[in-house]
Image (cartoon, rainbow, N blue to C red; front, side, top):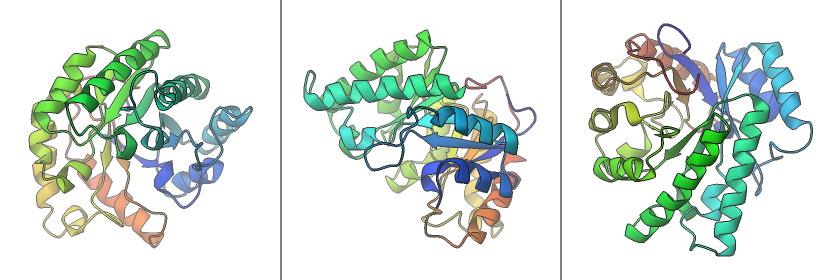
Length: 277
């Protein structure tokens, strides 16, 4: 628990720099935490490269930025929905183990496993395969004292089904304020439906290049409705992670979004202790 209202974090994979430079950038904006991408598969140096975890921990300790989570975005290229016993399925499980072990090395408790592109859940068969992998992965997370969280764009009903079929106390769902909205899902309604199934690190996104005027002060309709949903749903939101794409944005946008996120965080009152510390 961060104490008080949610703290603000950044997502490394959406920044113009990686690794130690990303940690430095977060510190320069007064941001308290950062989620890291595992890397690999054309996404940068993997976190399990010898010495890398130690170096990142040292940089984080020196800058006062907390390492929050490890994200396995390479799974979007491999496929959690790959047929069982296929080469891709074996690769996916190997990647999950690498993610979990890297989280232990970094001293973080939350591991993010996304379901996009090659891992998209777009039918009953894909849902079945995803449940199978996540049930196994959640048990592997439990043995390491970690929390595994899946991000997807499922309907609220199907998201609840996924959560219940995985059936683990070490499993959560990642809330993203942007992706479900693009798919036509009412995000405050999603919050109310999922409730405490949601991980305590929430992706705050509007985009594509930053939070819109409603977040920054010109009306704030969406922000108001969402903050009310959080307050009424029994969710502990400890971190708001800005996940807009800042790789090509004017750097000043990050500062504007951090300020807007802090104003939003001031509206959210924590209701219970979260999952990932």
